[in-house]
Image (cartoon, rainbow, N blue to C red; front, side, top):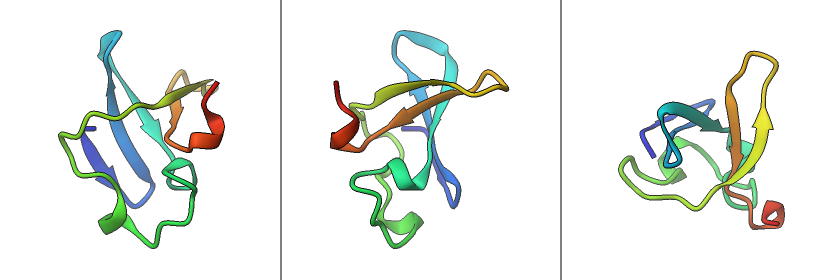
Length: 69
């Protein structure tokens, strides 16, 4: 995990090291976090599920266990 923002997390993608993805706040855990201070800290390795690309080509991920294959 690279950075946390009010709009979610910036994450480095292990298989595509040059690319950055993001996780929206409602996709962190079960989606019931109060704010940025509850997001995982920068530097933590996350096991995220790839949800696809946005129309702008951004990589979307989820940390919600319900989204795991």
